[in-house]
Structures are given as C-alpha cells and as structure tokens.
Length: 326
Image (cartoon, helix red, strand yellow):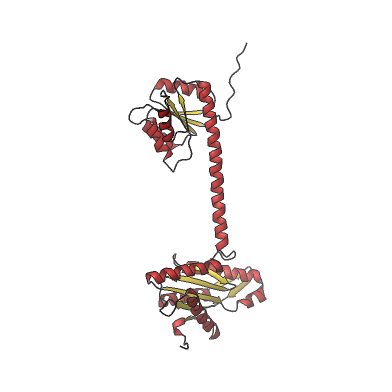
C-alpha cells in the first residue's frame, strides 16, 4: 500500500526562523517544517538571529530560550522593541515550564511558547495559529496605512484650493491668525501681500473660463517659484491671492511683490491658440504698533491693493505710503 504524502499547509512558503544553539534540535525542527512547505532559515545564537531578522524579517520565529551570550528573552525584547520591524510572532521553545518562566517569556514580548520535548503536531498547530494571527495583523496594518493616506488626502483637500493647489481662503486666514500671534509674541516682523490680477474678468468674458483657469494656475506657479519655503500662499478668492511673509519687513515684502509683478508682466500665458499678457496689482502691509489684530493687518493690505487698482494697476503699493485720517 502506497503511503500518502503530507499535503503542504496553507501557509507554505512562509519564512520561519529557527534560533537554537543545538544543531540536533535545529535539524529535527527544520526537517519537519520544511516537509510542510515552509521556507526555513536558521540561526545558532541571539546576535545571528537579530542580524537575520534585520536582513529579511521572517513571518515567524521559533526561539530557544537557553542560549549562550544572549538568551531568548533578550532576543525577543530587542525584536519587539524595534519599531522598524513588522509584527513578527515569536514562539519560545523551552525546557522550563514553570509559570514564572512562561510569564517572563510573555513579558519579553513572546507571543506563545512550547515546551521540550517538542510535540510536533502541537508545534505545527501553534505555528499555523501564529501565522494566521500575523496575516490578520499585516492586513490590519495595511488598512491602517491606507486609512492614514486617505486621511492625509482629505486633510489636504480641506485646506487647499482645488484649482491652484494653494491654501484656500479659510485655511490661509487661519494661518494668518497663527502667524500674527507668533510674531506678536516673538516681536518679529510679518508682512502680507494681497494681489489681484488686472482685468481678469475680461479674460473670462473674451476667452472663457477654461482659459481663465490656466491664467490662475500659472499665476499660482509663479508665486510658488518666487516665494520662500517659509512663506504661505493662498488663493483668497476669484483672481485674488494672498502671501504671508514671516520675519519680513515692509521693504522686503514690497520687493517680493515687485518680483512677482515683474514676472507676471513678462510671462506669456497660453491656452492652446490663445496667448495672453497679464498684469497684477499688489498691496503690502506689515505688522506695526498700531495694528492690533490680523484682520487689521489684512485690511491695510486690502486698502493698499485698492489704491494700486485705482491709480493705474500693475503696481505695488505699501500701506505706509497711504495717507490716512488719524
């Protein structure tokens, strides 16, 4: 009568690391698990095991407790405390079966234990059980990562203008409040620039909104290329943009606004066969002693912008240049 060979388990191909300083134990366990289709790796001491785990994390570790130089408890602790590693179930293999020994092993991070002499059907059952738990944990980790990515995308959508990719009106205003309070505390300067594309309505009326969108997108790109990493850029509404310039006085802010004005004036906006030249008007305001709120800082920049639009467009007006009634 022909003996039927054992069918490979559903977990066949999973990497199992056997850690034991006794070559006879390694050979016996290796032969049994390899016959079930597992990809068996071996290590003869704790440091060799740690090196093997770092090089290619196994799906499960069978870890002898009593080893020279570094016992299984310490190996388990180091693996479980390594945040760079995925979840790896550890089954301690020990001749000690007292409650205290089992508690010490579990406290060291081990997930299960089996006592010597090894009962191989029990060993296989525990291996399969731990591998199923790892599969569930890996799936949970994957879903959590996907959820984290989705949450980051939702967060970005909630604070970003969908067309230009700059911060939207609500979020840029929140950032203005934060930066205003920070600079008030640290007594550092902060400036804002309000910008408005000149005669933008004519672009939409003459060439259509898709061409207008191209102009807005290219303007946002020019702003990004001109601004520093610490500057905050927002689309304030329609064809109006705002830039928050931390640690920047009025003169430097006006120079920034002039660079943007010059670049936009020189830029050829194109949308298929349509080619356009555009200009931009800007108002600059800087935190000073008589400005006691972010809204007042914003109002000063808006007033300067209005002045720039009313007195010829395509220019930068500083708030300090304007005459105000007391």
